[in-house]
Image 1: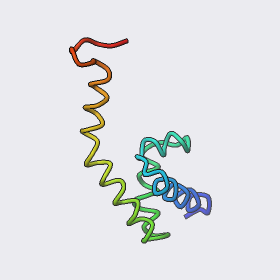
Image 2: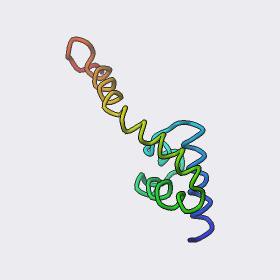
Image 3: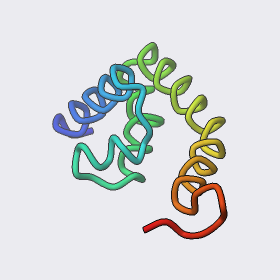
Length: 87
């Protein structure tokens, strides 16, 4: 594995842990694709730092379990209480 990829995987892991962020938010912050972030933090990070990979996995699993709630909140904000589209 190339050095810059290893470094990126470690930086992504740290970023996700510190900010408790989603793959999408990490991808946007780093200017890379969601699939690259996912591969870095699931496959590559597990080889480089298994302990950090475990922490990241817990955060991503938590985000995955909560995503339906965030989606519902976004829809509620978009359409308001009366069901009409706002803005």
